[in-house]
Image (cartoon, rainbow, N blue to C red; front, side):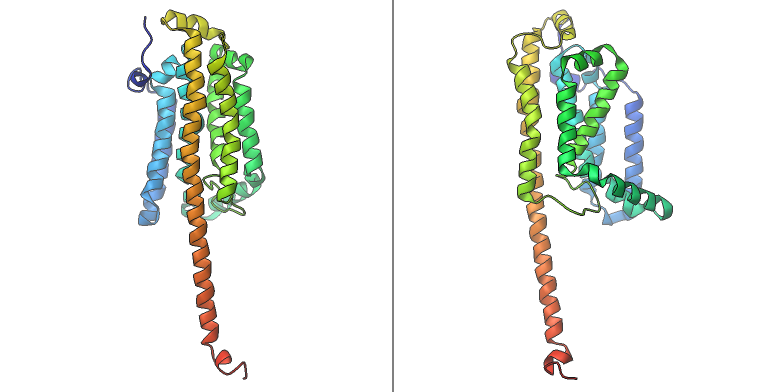
Length: 292
């Protein structure tokens, strides 16, 4: 049996399971809420959320999932989809903002209170700490080998990646719909650079290590006629180069968007100040020198 090419795994080996059902429900609920707002909700956000759900389905139901326990390079592609692509797109869809705009009564108040309670945990430093912990901890050989031998641990790893990726992108994409504080352009750039470090460390280690780091892949790669060390080097390059390149492009887009938004807010403040000053100057009290 020979190893398939990575591109072929995106179109072959598909199965239909719980991730497809959950993703479908999420997209249908989101689309229904967006339709309630009609043209007041940007179509690009709906498209981003649907694409994020699609990334989860590709990662967990395509041929990628069928080979993630046989080739480390395939497993790493799955990790990039769950850790970077899917969370970025889902948060770009601003589902919480949509929920706050469409929910009414007690449901809206409960969501607002939940956001208020969790706000200390979704600031930049805790988000980065959680991302570091998940990326570094799950790539320790003991944990990684556990996920390859036990399906429940493997599924838990997938959930961890989605959560950690969501926390990584949260401050960059202003995931909180009622921000009390937002990172400026330079703050986002620094946040991005710090966030890239754990992936660079793990990716470089796997890419340069002379022997197999995760023992279960030695036999499975050999059965497919693939060098386990060579496949491991490819996996490291995917995480180190491809993953961090994707982070750079998405992060720089977020930085530029933040700078443009800040410029628009400043222009709006200046316009409001000029209008307010004009109103005061045209008032009777100003024309009469303040005399009654």
